[in-house]
Image (cartoon, rainbow, N blue to C red; front, side):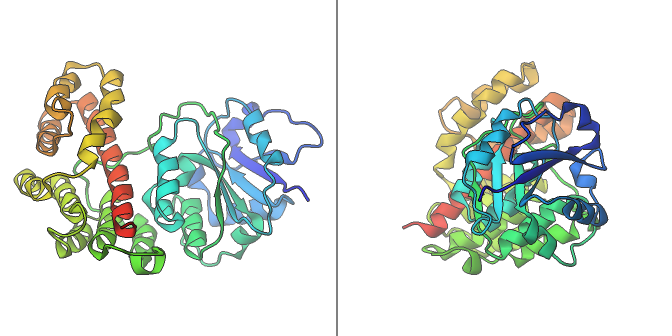
Length: 350
């Protein structure tokens, strides 16, 4: 039996919904908001009730071509076995790496899948969720809760081309964030619930497993809470990942001198050899002299300079230059996502 799918797009995207063959297992609909994160619990329930499809999908961006999604009909997805199917956007390399490297629970916490993929959720599982906290990003909350229970997830080979997607979330974490407000209490509760000993199948380095939690909290701006975990494993772990997260936490605090102390504690980390190549496209994207002036100090040695990036973040704060700030936030996003993956690998591999 072929699985059926209904994908909902924003109401404003009605004109971009493509025509499909009459016998297609795929259909489209709209949700009554301009943005997915504004969907309410009542509206989500109504969408579940109105569809007869096995899977409900959500897309918050205009499709470039529907044929890519049509390939789902030939993917032999079995509703009896698979609860979640993630179809990454073209260019969502960090997202794909997260789901290939981290556990589904940790990956769902690390970054909002709805900003990087078409997410298909088995209707029966979505209907089973009770007591979702009313909030923005309701679907992200629902997805985390589903993967937390151990439901089967599948990363599709299909890549979806959508307009205006550049590989980064719509809102990047700030270099020096304010304390998260109460509207994110639901996320903090789910971050607290994540325990490495429950989620990681094998732990070969307990300090690095603790550092994964420090990383998840740091990515979402819970700096004090992240500090507690990174400090508890200082100078320990395969590559001292806890010290690296400790460094990032103080850089974002911001306490730049303390951040440099912890960069010295890190010493060498393999990620420092990877970041120059990963950040190189940003120097091509941002052509202002304020950004290009940092290319030599940050990567000239062939290794990412933690202390020079601290100075770059300090200049962002002092100058208020918008392009330099955007560059630094994108570089920070790449750094934190890759460090989380490397930390998890250090925790689970010999």
